[in-house]
Image 1 (cartoon, one colour):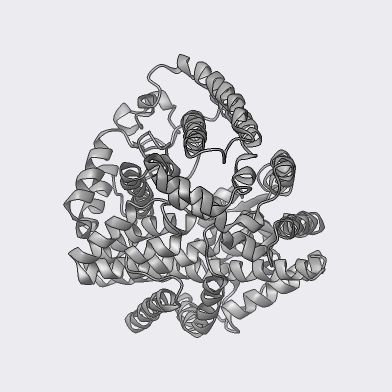
Image 2 (cartoon, rainbow, N blue to C red; image 1 turned 60 degrees about the vertical axis):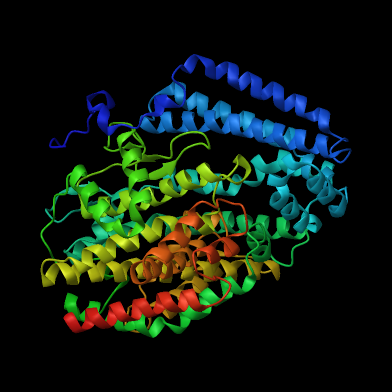
Length: 599
């Protein structure tokens, strides 16, 4: 990209932009489509009181509901992606907001559906499914609705809950505004002695600095605003946790953890197994941290020494096209069908490659059921960017296979399975790079990078998962989550995970206060389970070849047509057993052993 000035979108070659026009070649139709969605939603009320009257009526209602959501989703996705191209364009900001309002109305208008369906007997509804061919695709969906019957409220209560949804999300919105708009982290000096404003976006860059004083400065500046406002943040998080607890009680769950796992039908033992096995493996993490201390040549290892890379290699400039070539090589074990679909997608406008002024930062895979599985990138020619492409490509290929083989109702993915598809790709890339490393330093660098992935995904996210379990159990037993209590619990947890070989700096007790994921409780554990499953699956593909690969591709086709644990069994992994997490930990142990021998 050459210049340090961020380009305007109009200056970027069209071949590096996604073909979003394919969704709506003529934007002028969107207003009519949204008006029709509103009309269809209002007409949907005619099914009230009639859902269980006949198989034909039930099929009509299910089809109508899917059509409303599928149509609205396409416009919502388009508006959001258009906005993300350049957040300064007001028309797409307004379109995104309008879609959000319509979605809230549709949710309220259709909220009677599940409670009314559950007034019928499951036997009667399943007889309908047996008698009418068109209902067959809804068999799993309908049986799953009845599985959760005792947790669904009456029609009137569900309508109230739907209308209150905008209010019950307030704590998350408050934290988002505080975290992204109000908190300022001040200025620090970078490695060259220049004054730089510290932000969420550049914090990790400073934590990876070779200059220890820069890391320490960034660390203390990052935590100071949270320490200053800790009572406000604690109160916000306390009420967020209480909302989870009250909601779980209202819906007759034994705990908020049980409520969070219920939609995916995940046994509580999966959550507990993860925490137990990661805790068992902490001595291996301590061994790695000892090696980190030795390589950094410091008397004491502090929390601000945890992210700095241990092996220096020259920064490699990897143009986008070269990055794609590396990915194609790494994904060869996935076979010709996977590669042909991927190459066809790359050639037909799936990807928005480079940063431009106003563009949303980061990366994602997105799209509606009937659009291309688009990918937003901000590619900057680094090895990390190559990992980002292959990660998002995993999501997009998952969508590609699923949408070709599943109806709309199963055309999405749970987070539990989605993270597997992206991480299998990353694991294959890492294996390819380590196997083909041209010199010893590059190999050490890559092994260290792989160890860090385990540390930040499996260990760190499990520590977060353990913290969420602690806080929710405390709230359920009537404990008020004060700032002091939260900081004490987090400090003890951090000391357990990092061991006595790392200094527990005062600031780290406040880390919980800056984690946005805590406002979407019991979500982060899925990164750790997904990483474990992906480690096991990529190992099978590399070691067992065609059969393992074919099983995995069958899994990619399944969408949400069954519960995540059952779907992953198709790929040869049983997450209801502790084995996949144990296998992942064995891989981690082998990497640490090899790394400590090499250094």
